[in-house]
Image (cartoon, rainbow over all chains, first blue to last red):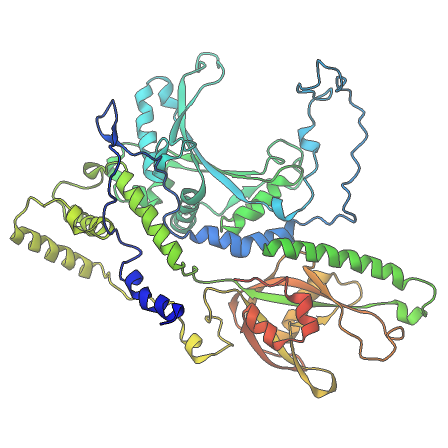
Length: 303
Length: 286
Protein backbone atom coordinates (compact mmCIF):
# COMPACT_ATOMS: atom_id res chain seq x y z
CA UNK A 1 0.00 0.00 0.00
CA UNK A 2 1.47 3.36 -0.97
CA UNK A 3 1.83 6.18 1.53
CA UNK A 4 -0.90 8.25 -0.15
CA UNK A 5 -3.33 5.35 0.06
CA UNK A 6 -2.38 4.88 3.70
CA UNK A 7 -3.07 8.52 4.36
CA UNK A 8 -6.51 8.18 2.77
CA UNK A 9 -7.21 5.03 4.77
CA UNK A 10 -6.26 6.89 7.94
CA UNK A 11 -8.40 9.95 7.16
CA UNK A 12 -11.74 8.53 8.43
CA UNK A 13 -10.23 7.84 11.85
CA UNK A 14 -9.38 11.54 12.01
CA UNK A 15 -12.80 12.75 10.84
CA UNK A 16 -14.60 10.40 13.21
CA UNK A 17 -13.99 12.98 15.92
CA UNK A 18 -16.01 16.13 15.55
CA UNK A 19 -13.91 19.25 15.30
CA UNK A 20 -16.52 21.36 17.02
CA UNK A 21 -17.43 19.19 20.01
CA UNK A 22 -15.74 18.56 23.29
CA UNK A 23 -14.31 15.07 23.30
CA UNK A 24 -12.64 14.10 26.53
CA UNK A 25 -11.32 16.15 29.41
CA UNK A 26 -7.51 16.44 29.28
CA UNK A 27 -5.59 14.16 31.59
CA UNK A 28 -4.27 16.17 34.52
CA UNK A 29 -0.72 14.98 35.10
CA UNK A 30 0.62 17.64 37.42
CA UNK A 31 -1.11 18.40 40.67
CA UNK A 32 -2.99 21.67 40.37
CA UNK A 33 -2.16 24.55 42.66
CA UNK A 34 -5.05 25.79 44.81
CA UNK A 35 -5.93 29.44 45.02
CA UNK A 36 -5.19 30.67 48.56
CA UNK A 37 -8.29 32.86 48.58
CA UNK A 38 -10.96 30.69 47.00
CA UNK A 39 -9.45 27.21 47.42
CA UNK A 40 -10.26 26.46 43.76
CA UNK A 41 -7.72 24.78 41.46
CA UNK A 42 -5.61 27.16 39.37
CA UNK A 43 -4.59 26.03 35.87
CA UNK A 44 -0.89 25.94 35.00
CA UNK A 45 -1.39 28.18 31.98
CA UNK A 46 -2.94 31.63 31.73
CA UNK A 47 -6.29 31.03 30.04
CA UNK A 48 -7.19 33.75 27.53
CA UNK A 49 -10.27 33.79 25.29
CA UNK A 50 -10.02 35.09 21.76
CA UNK A 51 -12.43 35.39 18.82
CA UNK A 52 -15.16 32.81 19.16
CA UNK A 53 -17.14 33.52 15.97
CA UNK A 54 -16.53 35.06 12.56
CA UNK A 55 -17.06 38.82 12.75
CA UNK A 56 -19.28 40.18 9.98
CA UNK A 57 -18.42 43.88 10.31
CA UNK A 58 -14.72 43.18 10.61
CA UNK A 59 -14.94 41.18 7.38
CA UNK A 60 -16.85 44.04 5.78
CA UNK A 61 -14.07 46.42 6.75
CA UNK A 62 -11.31 44.23 5.33
CA UNK A 63 -13.22 43.22 2.17
CA UNK A 64 -14.80 46.47 1.12
CA UNK A 65 -14.27 49.51 3.33
CA UNK A 66 -10.50 49.35 3.53
CA UNK A 67 -10.02 49.56 -0.24
CA UNK A 68 -12.63 52.28 -0.63
CA UNK A 69 -11.17 54.38 2.18
CA UNK A 70 -7.72 54.07 0.68
CA UNK A 71 -9.01 55.37 -2.65
CA UNK A 72 -10.99 58.16 -1.00
CA UNK A 73 -8.30 59.43 1.38
CA UNK A 74 -5.26 58.90 -0.84
CA UNK A 75 -3.12 62.03 -1.19
CA UNK A 76 -0.73 61.78 -4.08
CA UNK A 77 2.86 62.85 -3.48
CA UNK A 78 4.82 63.65 -6.63
CA UNK A 79 7.97 62.07 -5.24
CA UNK A 80 8.89 59.49 -2.63
CA UNK A 81 10.72 62.12 -0.61
CA UNK A 82 8.64 63.62 2.22
CA UNK A 83 7.64 67.25 1.68
CA UNK A 84 10.07 69.78 3.15
CA UNK A 85 9.38 70.72 6.74
CA UNK A 86 8.10 74.25 7.23
CA UNK A 87 10.68 76.82 8.31
CA UNK A 88 11.10 76.71 12.07
CA UNK A 89 10.53 80.23 13.28
CA UNK A 90 9.39 79.35 16.79
CA UNK A 91 12.14 78.87 19.31
CA UNK A 92 12.84 75.70 21.24
CA UNK A 93 15.49 74.93 23.78
CA UNK A 94 18.74 73.73 22.20
CA UNK A 95 17.99 70.04 21.44
CA UNK A 96 21.68 69.12 21.82
CA UNK A 97 21.94 70.60 25.28
CA UNK A 98 22.36 67.67 27.70
CA UNK A 99 19.64 69.17 29.91
CA UNK A 100 16.97 69.31 27.22
CA UNK A 101 18.16 66.38 25.10
CA UNK A 102 15.64 63.78 26.24
CA UNK A 103 13.00 66.15 27.58
CA UNK A 104 9.77 67.29 26.04
CA UNK A 105 10.84 70.33 24.07
CA UNK A 106 7.84 72.06 22.53
CA UNK A 107 8.27 75.27 20.55
CA UNK A 108 7.27 78.62 22.00
CA UNK A 109 3.52 79.05 21.65
CA UNK A 110 2.56 75.41 22.04
CA UNK A 111 2.91 72.28 19.99
CA UNK A 112 0.78 73.55 17.07
CA UNK A 113 -1.28 70.40 17.22
CA UNK A 114 -3.95 71.65 14.81
CA UNK A 115 -1.43 72.55 12.11
CA UNK A 116 0.30 69.19 11.83
CA UNK A 117 -0.31 67.74 8.37
CA UNK A 118 -1.67 64.23 8.03
CA UNK A 119 0.99 61.57 7.56
CA UNK A 120 1.60 60.51 3.93
CA UNK A 121 -0.85 57.91 2.59
CA UNK A 122 0.56 54.43 2.91
CA UNK A 123 -1.12 51.02 2.92
CA UNK A 124 -0.27 50.78 6.62
CA UNK A 125 -2.10 53.88 7.81
CA UNK A 126 -5.47 53.46 6.15
CA UNK A 127 -8.04 54.69 8.62
CA UNK A 128 -9.46 51.98 10.90
CA UNK A 129 -11.62 51.84 14.00
CA UNK A 130 -9.47 51.43 17.12
CA UNK A 131 -12.16 51.44 19.78
CA UNK A 132 -15.59 52.69 20.72
CA UNK A 133 -15.96 54.47 24.01
CA UNK A 134 -19.34 54.70 25.71
CA UNK A 135 -19.65 57.29 28.39
CA UNK A 136 -22.53 58.50 30.50
CA UNK A 137 -22.49 61.19 33.11
CA UNK A 138 -24.66 60.76 36.19
CA UNK A 139 -25.04 64.12 37.92
CA UNK A 140 -26.86 62.69 40.92
CA UNK A 141 -23.85 60.55 41.80
CA UNK A 142 -22.12 63.65 43.18
CA UNK A 143 -24.60 63.65 46.06
CA UNK A 144 -24.79 59.88 46.45
CA UNK A 145 -22.41 57.35 44.98
CA UNK A 146 -25.08 54.65 44.85
CA UNK A 147 -26.82 56.58 42.05
CA UNK A 148 -24.11 55.20 39.76
CA UNK A 149 -25.38 51.65 40.13
CA UNK A 150 -28.18 52.00 37.57
CA UNK A 151 -25.82 53.41 34.95
CA UNK A 152 -23.24 50.71 35.69
CA UNK A 153 -25.82 47.97 35.31
CA UNK A 154 -27.03 49.50 32.06
CA UNK A 155 -23.49 49.65 30.65
CA UNK A 156 -22.83 46.11 31.78
CA UNK A 157 -25.99 44.88 30.05
CA UNK A 158 -25.18 46.84 26.88
CA UNK A 159 -21.61 45.68 26.46
CA UNK A 160 -21.10 42.58 28.61
CA UNK A 161 -17.61 43.82 29.45
CA UNK A 162 -16.10 42.96 32.80
CA UNK A 163 -12.79 43.79 34.46
CA UNK A 164 -10.03 41.75 32.76
CA UNK A 165 -12.77 39.75 31.08
CA UNK A 166 -11.58 36.73 29.12
CA UNK A 167 -8.16 36.91 30.80
CA UNK A 168 -7.14 40.07 28.90
CA UNK A 169 -5.29 42.38 31.25
CA UNK A 170 -6.06 45.46 29.10
CA UNK A 171 -9.83 45.02 29.26
CA UNK A 172 -11.03 47.35 31.97
CA UNK A 173 -14.76 46.67 31.94
CA UNK A 174 -17.12 49.31 33.25
CA UNK A 175 -14.98 52.10 34.69
CA UNK A 176 -15.97 54.89 37.02
CA UNK A 177 -15.17 58.42 35.82
CA UNK A 178 -14.06 60.71 38.62
CA UNK A 179 -13.87 64.48 38.80
CA UNK A 180 -10.48 65.95 37.90
CA UNK A 181 -10.87 69.52 39.01
CA UNK A 182 -12.79 71.35 41.67
CA UNK A 183 -15.79 73.14 40.21
CA UNK A 184 -17.09 75.72 42.66
CA UNK A 185 -19.80 74.36 44.93
CA UNK A 186 -20.40 71.25 42.85
CA UNK A 187 -17.47 69.00 42.06
CA UNK A 188 -14.31 67.99 43.86
CA UNK A 189 -11.37 65.95 42.52
CA UNK A 190 -11.93 62.24 43.00
CA UNK A 191 -15.73 62.42 43.20
CA UNK A 192 -17.44 59.83 40.92
CA UNK A 193 -19.45 61.57 38.18
CA UNK A 194 -20.10 58.90 35.57
CA UNK A 195 -19.25 55.57 34.01
CA UNK A 196 -17.48 54.60 30.80
CA UNK A 197 -16.63 51.47 28.82
CA UNK A 198 -13.95 50.95 26.17
CA UNK A 199 -14.86 48.42 23.49
CA UNK A 200 -12.28 46.87 21.20
CA UNK A 201 -12.23 44.07 18.67
CA UNK A 202 -15.15 41.71 18.42
CA UNK A 203 -17.27 43.31 21.14
CA UNK A 204 -16.78 46.69 19.46
CA UNK A 205 -18.12 45.39 16.16
CA UNK A 206 -20.99 43.61 17.96
CA UNK A 207 -22.03 46.85 19.63
CA UNK A 208 -21.73 48.77 16.35
CA UNK A 209 -23.91 46.23 14.57
CA UNK A 210 -26.57 46.40 17.28
CA UNK A 211 -26.55 50.19 17.24
CA UNK A 212 -26.90 50.44 13.48
CA UNK A 213 -29.47 47.68 12.97
CA UNK A 214 -31.72 47.90 16.04
CA UNK A 215 -31.42 51.33 17.58
CA UNK A 216 -30.82 54.07 15.01
CA UNK A 217 -33.60 52.97 12.58
CA UNK A 218 -36.14 53.00 15.42
CA UNK A 219 -35.30 56.48 16.72
CA UNK A 220 -37.93 58.89 15.43
CA UNK A 221 -36.09 62.15 16.00
CA UNK A 222 -32.68 60.98 14.84
CA UNK A 223 -31.87 61.79 11.21
CA UNK A 224 -28.14 61.46 11.53
CA UNK A 225 -25.08 62.81 13.25
CA UNK A 226 -25.10 66.56 12.60
CA UNK A 227 -22.07 67.79 10.68
CA UNK A 228 -20.54 71.12 11.69
CA UNK A 229 -21.10 74.05 9.28
CA UNK A 230 -18.51 74.35 6.54
CA UNK A 231 -17.31 77.62 8.06
CA UNK A 232 -16.11 75.86 11.21
CA UNK A 233 -12.39 75.67 11.89
CA UNK A 234 -10.47 72.65 10.62
CA UNK A 235 -7.67 73.17 13.13
CA UNK A 236 -9.43 72.59 16.41
CA UNK A 237 -8.21 69.64 18.51
CA UNK A 238 -11.44 67.75 17.80
CA UNK A 239 -11.07 68.20 14.03
CA UNK A 240 -7.53 66.80 13.96
CA UNK A 241 -7.88 63.93 16.41
CA UNK A 242 -9.83 61.46 14.27
CA UNK A 243 -12.78 60.94 16.64
CA UNK A 244 -16.47 60.96 15.73
CA UNK A 245 -18.82 61.51 18.65
CA UNK A 246 -22.53 61.73 19.17
CA UNK A 247 -25.01 61.18 21.95
CA UNK A 248 -28.10 59.08 22.53
CA UNK A 249 -30.92 60.26 24.83
CA UNK A 250 -32.20 58.06 27.70
CA UNK A 251 -35.31 56.99 25.77
CA UNK A 252 -33.10 55.50 23.02
CA UNK A 253 -31.71 52.90 25.42
CA UNK A 254 -34.87 50.82 25.35
CA UNK A 255 -34.23 50.03 21.67
CA UNK A 256 -31.10 48.05 22.48
CA UNK A 257 -32.24 44.41 22.54
CA UNK A 258 -30.10 43.79 25.63
CA UNK A 259 -32.20 46.30 27.55
CA UNK A 260 -35.46 45.90 25.66
CA UNK A 261 -36.06 42.44 27.13
CA UNK A 262 -36.44 43.81 30.64
CA UNK A 263 -36.78 47.58 30.56
CA UNK A 264 -38.93 47.40 33.68
CA UNK A 265 -35.99 46.10 35.72
CA UNK A 266 -34.22 49.46 35.40
CA UNK A 267 -35.46 52.20 37.73
CA UNK A 268 -34.15 54.83 35.33
CA UNK A 269 -32.43 54.84 31.94
CA UNK A 270 -29.37 56.95 31.26
CA UNK A 271 -28.32 58.53 27.98
CA UNK A 272 -24.77 58.15 26.75
CA UNK A 273 -22.10 59.59 24.53
CA UNK A 274 -20.57 57.33 21.90
CA UNK A 275 -17.07 58.07 20.66
CA UNK A 276 -15.71 56.27 17.60
CA UNK A 277 -11.95 56.51 18.01
CA UNK A 278 -9.90 55.92 14.85
CA UNK A 279 -6.19 55.98 14.03
CA UNK A 280 -6.47 59.09 11.82
CA UNK A 281 -4.34 62.07 12.86
CA UNK A 282 -3.40 65.47 11.47
CA UNK A 283 -5.37 67.95 9.39
CA UNK A 284 -8.56 66.37 8.00
CA UNK A 285 -8.51 63.45 10.45
CA UNK A 286 -12.12 63.88 11.50
CA UNK A 287 -13.27 63.75 7.87
CA UNK A 288 -11.46 60.45 7.41
CA UNK A 289 -13.03 59.15 10.60
CA UNK A 290 -16.48 60.21 9.34
CA UNK A 291 -15.89 58.44 6.04
CA UNK A 292 -15.01 55.27 7.94
CA UNK A 293 -17.94 55.45 10.35
CA UNK A 294 -20.42 56.19 7.57
CA UNK A 295 -19.14 53.03 5.89
CA UNK A 296 -20.63 51.19 8.86
CA UNK A 297 -23.98 52.88 8.07
CA UNK A 298 -23.99 55.62 10.69
CA UNK A 299 -25.89 58.44 8.93
CA UNK A 300 -24.64 62.03 8.80
CA UNK A 301 -26.66 65.16 7.96
CA UNK A 302 -25.96 68.82 7.38
CA UNK A 303 -27.92 71.54 9.09
CA UNK B 1 -1.94 42.75 0.92
CA UNK B 2 -4.39 43.58 -1.79
CA UNK B 3 -4.61 47.21 -0.78
CA UNK B 4 -0.83 47.49 -0.64
CA UNK B 5 -0.43 46.32 -4.19
CA UNK B 6 -3.32 48.52 -5.31
CA UNK B 7 -1.86 51.58 -3.69
CA UNK B 8 1.56 50.99 -5.11
CA UNK B 9 0.08 50.29 -8.50
CA UNK B 10 -1.92 53.49 -8.42
CA UNK B 11 1.03 55.58 -7.37
CA UNK B 12 3.38 54.11 -9.93
CA UNK B 13 0.89 54.44 -12.72
CA UNK B 14 0.09 58.04 -11.91
CA UNK B 15 3.75 58.88 -11.80
CA UNK B 16 4.42 57.22 -15.11
CA UNK B 17 1.49 59.10 -16.57
CA UNK B 18 2.90 62.48 -15.57
CA UNK B 19 6.28 61.61 -17.07
CA UNK B 20 4.63 60.37 -20.25
CA UNK B 21 2.90 63.69 -20.68
CA UNK B 22 6.24 65.47 -20.34
CA UNK B 23 7.71 63.19 -23.00
CA UNK B 24 4.78 63.89 -25.26
CA UNK B 25 5.43 67.62 -25.10
CA UNK B 26 8.92 67.23 -26.53
CA UNK B 27 9.33 69.27 -29.71
CA UNK B 28 10.30 66.26 -31.90
CA UNK B 29 6.66 65.19 -32.28
CA UNK B 30 4.03 66.77 -34.43
CA UNK B 31 1.42 68.97 -32.80
CA UNK B 32 -1.37 66.52 -33.61
CA UNK B 33 0.30 63.43 -32.11
CA UNK B 34 1.20 65.25 -28.92
CA UNK B 35 -2.25 65.20 -27.39
CA UNK B 36 -2.98 61.86 -25.73
CA UNK B 37 -6.47 60.36 -25.82
CA UNK B 38 -7.96 59.84 -22.38
CA UNK B 39 -10.86 57.58 -21.46
CA UNK B 40 -12.30 56.25 -18.23
CA UNK B 41 -13.30 52.73 -17.29
CA UNK B 42 -15.40 51.68 -14.29
CA UNK B 43 -14.54 48.65 -12.17
CA UNK B 44 -18.12 48.10 -10.97
CA UNK B 45 -18.07 45.89 -7.91
CA UNK B 46 -20.70 43.84 -6.11
CA UNK B 47 -19.36 43.38 -2.58
CA UNK B 48 -19.76 40.03 -0.81
CA UNK B 49 -23.31 39.51 0.47
CA UNK B 50 -22.53 36.45 2.59
CA UNK B 51 -19.97 35.90 5.31
CA UNK B 52 -17.09 33.68 4.33
CA UNK B 53 -17.46 29.99 5.21
CA UNK B 54 -14.85 29.30 7.88
CA UNK B 55 -12.21 26.68 7.14
CA UNK B 56 -12.25 23.48 9.26
CA UNK B 57 -9.38 24.90 11.26
CA UNK B 58 -11.27 28.13 11.90
CA UNK B 59 -14.39 26.18 12.86
CA UNK B 60 -12.43 24.12 15.38
CA UNK B 61 -10.70 27.22 16.73
CA UNK B 62 -13.95 29.17 17.13
CA UNK B 63 -15.72 26.33 18.90
CA UNK B 64 -12.75 25.83 21.19
CA UNK B 65 -12.71 29.53 22.08
CA UNK B 66 -16.48 29.51 22.58
CA UNK B 67 -16.08 26.61 25.00
CA UNK B 68 -13.46 28.49 26.99
CA UNK B 69 -15.74 31.52 27.17
CA UNK B 70 -18.62 29.33 28.27
CA UNK B 71 -16.49 27.75 30.97
CA UNK B 72 -15.22 31.10 32.28
CA UNK B 73 -18.27 33.35 31.95
CA UNK B 74 -19.71 35.23 34.89
CA UNK B 75 -22.83 33.66 36.44
CA UNK B 76 -25.96 34.67 34.55
CA UNK B 77 -28.38 36.76 36.65
CA UNK B 78 -31.59 34.78 36.01
CA UNK B 79 -33.70 36.74 38.48
CA UNK B 80 -32.74 40.05 36.83
CA UNK B 81 -33.87 38.97 33.38
CA UNK B 82 -36.78 36.54 34.02
CA UNK B 83 -39.77 36.34 36.32
CA UNK B 84 -39.60 33.26 38.50
CA UNK B 85 -41.30 30.30 36.81
CA UNK B 86 -42.22 32.19 33.63
CA UNK B 87 -42.44 30.50 30.26
CA UNK B 88 -39.55 32.56 28.94
CA UNK B 89 -37.36 31.36 31.79
CA UNK B 90 -38.26 27.76 30.99
CA UNK B 91 -37.40 28.30 27.35
CA UNK B 92 -34.08 29.86 28.27
CA UNK B 93 -33.27 26.99 30.63
CA UNK B 94 -33.99 24.35 27.99
CA UNK B 95 -31.97 26.19 25.35
CA UNK B 96 -29.13 26.79 27.78
CA UNK B 97 -28.97 23.10 28.72
CA UNK B 98 -28.83 22.22 25.03
CA UNK B 99 -25.98 24.65 24.45
CA UNK B 100 -24.19 23.31 27.51
CA UNK B 101 -24.63 19.75 26.26
CA UNK B 102 -23.34 20.68 22.82
CA UNK B 103 -20.28 22.36 24.32
CA UNK B 104 -19.21 19.90 27.01
CA UNK B 105 -21.13 16.70 26.35
CA UNK B 106 -24.12 15.11 28.12
CA UNK B 107 -22.05 13.89 31.07
CA UNK B 108 -21.34 17.45 32.11
CA UNK B 109 -24.98 18.45 32.73
CA UNK B 110 -26.33 18.42 36.24
CA UNK B 111 -29.53 16.50 36.85
CA UNK B 112 -32.66 18.64 36.83
CA UNK B 113 -34.68 18.53 40.05
CA UNK B 114 -38.08 18.24 38.29
CA UNK B 115 -40.14 15.20 37.42
CA UNK B 116 -40.08 13.71 33.94
CA UNK B 117 -43.75 14.67 33.41
CA UNK B 118 -43.00 18.26 34.35
CA UNK B 119 -40.04 18.32 31.97
CA UNK B 120 -42.13 17.04 29.05
CA UNK B 121 -44.85 19.59 29.87
CA UNK B 122 -42.26 22.40 29.80
CA UNK B 123 -40.93 21.27 26.44
CA UNK B 124 -44.46 21.13 25.00
CA UNK B 125 -45.25 24.62 26.32
CA UNK B 126 -42.06 26.03 24.83
CA UNK B 127 -42.81 24.40 21.48
CA UNK B 128 -46.27 25.95 21.56
CA UNK B 129 -44.69 29.35 22.20
CA UNK B 130 -42.32 28.87 19.26
CA UNK B 131 -45.28 28.09 16.96
CA UNK B 132 -47.14 31.18 18.19
CA UNK B 133 -44.14 33.41 17.59
CA UNK B 134 -43.65 31.99 14.09
CA UNK B 135 -40.16 30.68 14.68
CA UNK B 136 -38.51 27.97 12.68
CA UNK B 137 -38.68 29.66 9.29
CA UNK B 138 -36.16 28.13 6.94
CA UNK B 139 -33.36 30.46 5.93
CA UNK B 140 -32.40 30.99 2.32
CA UNK B 141 -29.62 28.60 1.28
CA UNK B 142 -26.08 29.93 1.12
CA UNK B 143 -25.75 28.56 -2.39
CA UNK B 144 -27.99 30.43 -4.82
CA UNK B 145 -29.57 28.57 -7.73
CA UNK B 146 -27.54 30.70 -10.17
CA UNK B 147 -24.43 29.01 -8.73
CA UNK B 148 -25.67 25.61 -9.85
CA UNK B 149 -27.06 26.78 -13.21
CA UNK B 150 -23.92 28.80 -13.99
CA UNK B 151 -25.87 32.01 -14.65
CA UNK B 152 -23.16 34.69 -14.71
CA UNK B 153 -25.66 37.55 -15.10
CA UNK B 154 -27.22 37.08 -11.69
CA UNK B 155 -26.17 39.46 -8.92
CA UNK B 156 -26.92 36.75 -6.33
CA UNK B 157 -24.25 34.36 -7.57
CA UNK B 158 -21.06 33.64 -5.59
CA UNK B 159 -22.33 35.44 -2.48
CA UNK B 160 -19.05 35.13 -0.62
CA UNK B 161 -16.97 36.72 -3.37
CA UNK B 162 -16.40 40.15 -4.86
CA UNK B 163 -17.97 40.28 -8.33
CA UNK B 164 -17.01 42.67 -11.10
CA UNK B 165 -18.98 43.72 -14.16
CA UNK B 166 -17.43 42.79 -17.50
CA UNK B 167 -18.89 43.72 -20.90
CA UNK B 168 -18.49 41.78 -24.12
CA UNK B 169 -17.91 44.29 -26.88
CA UNK B 170 -17.08 44.40 -30.53
CA UNK B 171 -13.35 44.92 -30.77
CA UNK B 172 -11.01 45.69 -33.65
CA UNK B 173 -11.55 43.58 -36.75
CA UNK B 174 -14.93 42.21 -35.66
CA UNK B 175 -13.34 40.20 -32.84
CA UNK B 176 -15.35 40.47 -29.63
CA UNK B 177 -13.43 41.21 -26.43
CA UNK B 178 -14.31 41.40 -22.76
CA UNK B 179 -13.56 44.62 -20.90
CA UNK B 180 -14.87 46.89 -18.15
CA UNK B 181 -17.47 49.56 -19.07
CA UNK B 182 -15.55 52.35 -20.73
CA UNK B 183 -16.02 55.70 -22.45
CA UNK B 184 -14.32 58.90 -23.52
CA UNK B 185 -13.80 62.14 -21.60
CA UNK B 186 -15.21 65.32 -23.07
CA UNK B 187 -13.37 68.60 -22.86
CA UNK B 188 -13.79 70.34 -19.52
CA UNK B 189 -15.24 67.23 -17.88
CA UNK B 190 -13.80 65.85 -14.67
CA UNK B 191 -12.62 62.26 -14.76
CA UNK B 192 -14.96 60.93 -12.07
CA UNK B 193 -17.96 62.64 -13.67
CA UNK B 194 -17.02 61.16 -17.01
CA UNK B 195 -16.81 57.74 -15.35
CA UNK B 196 -20.38 57.99 -14.03
CA UNK B 197 -21.67 59.21 -17.39
CA UNK B 198 -19.87 56.46 -19.32
CA UNK B 199 -21.26 53.82 -16.98
CA UNK B 200 -24.82 54.98 -17.64
CA UNK B 201 -24.14 55.21 -21.39
CA UNK B 202 -23.07 51.55 -21.66
CA UNK B 203 -25.04 49.87 -18.88
CA UNK B 204 -28.29 51.82 -18.71
CA UNK B 205 -29.64 53.72 -15.73
CA UNK B 206 -31.65 50.88 -14.20
CA UNK B 207 -29.24 50.63 -11.31
CA UNK B 208 -28.06 52.55 -8.27
CA UNK B 209 -24.33 52.93 -8.43
CA UNK B 210 -21.71 54.95 -6.66
CA UNK B 211 -18.26 55.93 -7.92
CA UNK B 212 -15.71 55.71 -5.09
CA UNK B 213 -13.69 58.89 -4.76
CA UNK B 214 -12.41 61.23 -7.41
CA UNK B 215 -9.04 59.67 -8.02
CA UNK B 216 -8.43 56.87 -10.50
CA UNK B 217 -7.33 53.54 -9.04
CA UNK B 218 -5.27 52.41 -12.01
CA UNK B 219 -4.24 53.17 -15.55
CA UNK B 220 -3.93 51.10 -18.70
CA UNK B 221 -2.27 51.90 -22.01
CA UNK B 222 -3.75 49.75 -24.80
CA UNK B 223 -1.31 48.48 -27.43
CA UNK B 224 -1.44 50.54 -30.63
CA UNK B 225 -2.57 48.73 -33.76
CA UNK B 226 -0.71 50.93 -36.25
CA UNK B 227 2.79 49.82 -37.27
CA UNK B 228 4.47 53.10 -36.35
CA UNK B 229 3.55 54.06 -32.81
CA UNK B 230 5.03 57.52 -33.18
CA UNK B 231 2.23 58.48 -35.57
CA UNK B 232 -0.73 57.49 -33.41
CA UNK B 233 -1.73 59.51 -30.34
CA UNK B 234 -1.15 57.84 -27.02
CA UNK B 235 -4.22 56.35 -25.38
CA UNK B 236 -4.72 56.09 -21.62
CA UNK B 237 -7.58 54.38 -19.82
CA UNK B 238 -8.11 55.45 -16.20
CA UNK B 239 -9.94 53.00 -13.94
CA UNK B 240 -12.45 54.12 -11.32
CA UNK B 241 -13.96 51.90 -8.68
CA UNK B 242 -17.75 51.79 -8.37
CA UNK B 243 -20.29 49.91 -6.29
CA UNK B 244 -23.66 48.64 -7.41
CA UNK B 245 -26.29 49.08 -4.69
CA UNK B 246 -29.47 47.99 -6.45
CA UNK B 247 -30.88 47.26 -9.89
CA UNK B 248 -29.23 45.44 -12.75
CA UNK B 249 -27.28 46.21 -15.90
CA UNK B 250 -29.17 46.66 -19.17
CA UNK B 251 -26.56 46.84 -21.95
CA UNK B 252 -27.29 49.86 -24.12
CA UNK B 253 -24.10 51.05 -25.78
CA UNK B 254 -23.57 50.62 -29.53
CA UNK B 255 -20.98 47.83 -29.45
CA UNK B 256 -22.08 46.11 -26.24
CA UNK B 257 -23.17 42.53 -26.86
CA UNK B 258 -23.29 40.92 -23.45
CA UNK B 259 -22.40 41.37 -19.79
CA UNK B 260 -21.33 39.15 -16.90
CA UNK B 261 -20.68 39.44 -13.16
CA UNK B 262 -17.40 37.62 -12.59
CA UNK B 263 -14.88 36.84 -9.89
CA UNK B 264 -11.20 37.58 -10.29
CA UNK B 265 -10.27 34.11 -11.60
CA UNK B 266 -13.12 34.09 -14.11
CA UNK B 267 -12.01 37.48 -15.41
CA UNK B 268 -8.49 36.23 -16.08
CA UNK B 269 -9.73 33.57 -18.48
CA UNK B 270 -11.79 36.03 -20.53
CA UNK B 271 -9.71 39.19 -20.99
CA UNK B 272 -6.59 39.75 -23.08
CA UNK B 273 -3.27 39.10 -21.27
CA UNK B 274 -2.21 42.72 -21.75
CA UNK B 275 -5.44 43.96 -20.18
CA UNK B 276 -5.15 41.41 -17.36
CA UNK B 277 -1.69 42.66 -16.40
CA UNK B 278 -3.10 46.15 -15.94
CA UNK B 279 -6.13 45.14 -13.87
CA UNK B 280 -5.05 42.12 -11.83
CA UNK B 281 -3.82 44.15 -8.84
CA UNK B 282 -6.99 46.23 -8.74
CA UNK B 283 -9.28 43.24 -8.21
CA UNK B 284 -9.91 41.60 -4.87
CA UNK B 285 -8.72 38.04 -4.29
CA UNK B 286 -11.76 37.20 -2.14
